Length: 287
Image (cartoon, rainbow, N blue to C red; front, top):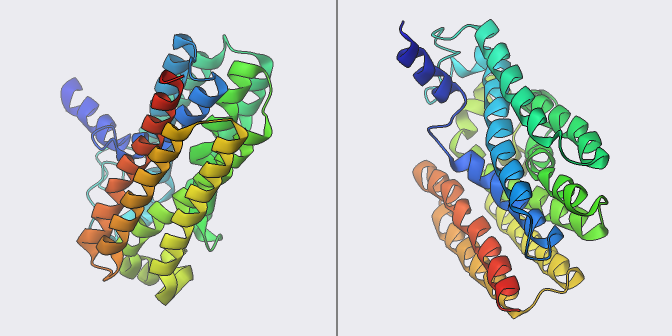
């Protein structure tokens, strides 16, 4: 196998050809970056947290495939992934994950001590999440913490402290992650039952659609609280209204539990995160 073919496999393993995971992690991080920077974050902070998001999400995907390598072979959607199919060895996967995490850590070395300290639980959360499906009934909540930990880190990097608004934003991200990842879990419900894996879709059962919409509601309510705490103006709340409309559109997609439409709703969450961020940007720009 030549270098180009090997590189293509590594890209697939890190899921760089499917950027939705990067975007779902990046939007809440950018919410934190923008609010912490009062609408004018340093370009170095934007660069570090954007690239760090890409690297850590990629490392998390590799660890996820390593953790699920014996499970994925029994799932039609995942049985041909590089690690599961044997095209990439477990040693290669672990080395790739370590390299990606190391590069991410190098990025934050110029930042303050608090940010460096927070990077320790951030790495632990990213590395341990794939294993939580074995024992947590709602592993999506853990995912929300892992995907949102860039928020307190952004405040730490900008302010050398983590104010209460950062934790409200993180809490909102937990409920958002439960919402969109339950939509994703609704696609794999039959496989998860067969393999004995926990997921929020199984936990909520026949109330899964109600639970998703409830989590969207809590997410938007917490984002509104965060906006009030940060003294944000009308444009931000218009962004939340747009996000609410997107969430209501998702109800139309998932109400019949059609697998393809549930997956489409999951992918569409990129626009919900973007709407909130757009409201933030316009809010500060209009000041």
